[in-house]
Length: 399
Image 1 (tube, rainbow, N blue to C red):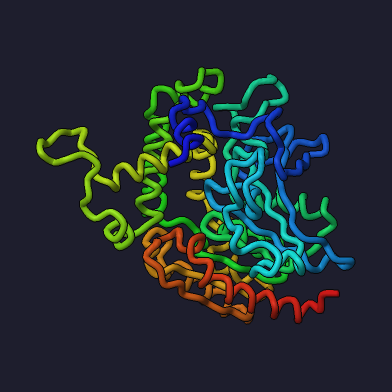
Image 2: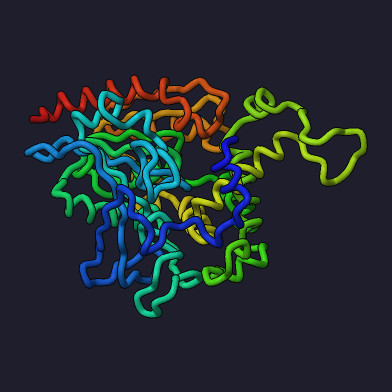
């Protein structure tokens, strides 16, 4: 570990890892999607001002037919590609898949990624300033849904001059957005790539989420969601760390944990104590502290709940009827060791879309990385994405 990393680790954990007004914008662009009119939310409530932070790579062609929307997962953000940059917590989270010559080839495609509403990296969320009070929203930020975010992204697309995406791509929560895009706006989606996702959250997925949220809300320093004025070191760190630890257990797999850690210990086992740590415990704690430095506890609650609320069939006659609205080709991807979003959920999507007559392809990723395999196994993901986009490009006759 270098000295810079050691110095950072010794600093008090921030109250929030959110990007806030006045911070370095990095590669972000910002769009107020309300235009002076409140943004109504699916589950009730309004956002008087709703801002999306987004990034783009490549160039939009003359016919605006080469645009690809990338949708991020729960703790992702708009910085999907490129290396580290001031204003961002690190390099792009899908940088191996996006760039010149990559599967999402920025020499050919205009790639867009927006931080979701409710997030904490530039888009309106609980850490943002509420226009009426001039203070962070905190507990007053309303619950958003996946459908709300797709409607917000549709306004971004119009702003960018994109009437129809060549493809919408995403995994996990990003896959939820991709599915919702293709169901809500079928005429605006040329093709769909949905990875390690589901048409609606299952009872077990909701149960895992509930455990993580309970950890945050049980932290006395969460203060009911209004903790932003607390000094460094006094935020709801332990709750968010615990939530991340729960998350990492179901994002990865038994095989991977055994391969990497086994029963190795940090401390000697000469004498048994409650404070003794196995290596896997230290790893989970490290991942939790790492998240605290780049994310926000309230955003975790809002977006985690949005995933539980995800249901493309809501008020549409059920999932199969909703998925029959998809009008373009689908590429579905599942991960062999994913027990959080098991393969059968992707196959339910595949079967429903195939019944509607749309071309469907499914790829199985072999990995012991669990649910995170769609992020880590880019060597397996990339060829299928490349072939799928090549076919879309040929069909749309991009000029």
